[in-house]
Image (cartoon, rainbow, N blue to C red):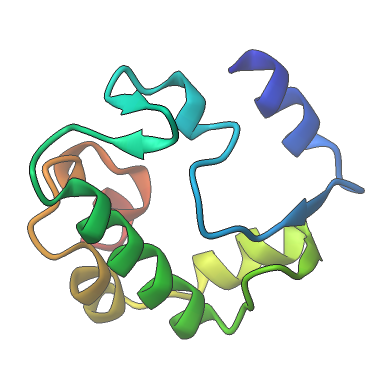
Length: 102
């Protein structure tokens, strides 16, 4: 994970938006064969949250973007938008963005 953080800290990093588990997801113990098994509906719930996020911040799956532009768009998400995306996510209370906007 430190490796990923180091890459993303680079101001020139380019990120491809995908609609499947990525390098960050690979560290999750619930991910098996590219599917989340955290709960019965976790895969569907995560895809819904991802799609809502892309729609709100105006990014398209399959496209590449400078990482700093993605971060800037995420920083501009309102609390009501974040609440809509995250709903009752079990990680919401640990989320730095949610805590900041709350």
